[in-house]
Image (cartoon, rainbow, N blue to C red):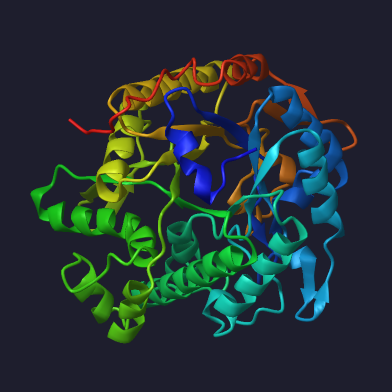
Length: 430
């Protein structure tokens, strides 16, 4: 069983390591204003119907744990209407197969009745209630919960890019969504611990590294990098007048009392989950000939993972788990990233950076987010990043097609910490 909040030292024992996987679980259930499409990955990949077989695939990998999203919009159909039937069945099956769920409570989307989405004034209390009800059902049996996956990306798509509700398109909207999200994370974490003090709140965010060779963009790159850490900094009480974003946050409409509230009752970051992809994570900033900011995402090597591990440990001093990583393309390309990234984890552990787990995510292909606002058929939006491919048969059914990556990953999971080496007993950065 995954260690409880009282047993977390077990994770940093020299021979301990957590291998994991998961099913992509983005839930944007508000229909797109123009296309009418929703983005429920479980629906689009047929997981609602094939959940039992998909969980059996997890078991074949030999993973001791797996991240698994709970579709809040199906659990709480109306403010006073609850239906845990799907969630109960899936989580019970994982437990029966000795796979400890790391429950993903919110993965971008909210129930349809939550007006104004994350800017609803009741959002923090509503999500805390949802978390507590689920935790009560599995008290003592499920110990790890992610209050909200990728708060920064959520705030970006909901508050700055305008793709998802509440469709904000400004930095002030980004900040407003971020503050509400973080209040929800705090309330959720407290509600979980009230149900069971042994629960681990696993805080997961996307990791980007911003760079620029243009001296004129140096300050902007620093600001963007500080924003990468903003959610974790807020919930752990690190944002005060000395924080590099303090003045910027106030200019974007954040109120001092709202910022100070996080410092009054900070959360402990017991374990940090980092999501990183060689195709997305490295951001190189430049200006085009018209002076517009441009950001390229060149393919990164395992050295980027090493840099990220050092950055997060130096900043927070907490154990770190790779909560998502994969790459798109051929099986050979995916195998190369698997080998490169595992080697980077080994390097970090040898340096004393407590990398305690690795998650290949997703276990099979996902449907790209552009599907929701697009018009092309679903099969044109499949992004093959998994250990299994999704292959549409003539009837449109998405078959799970095993690739050689399945055996490669099973060899890693069967060896425990052997593939990544022992963790240096005294964590110390060079």
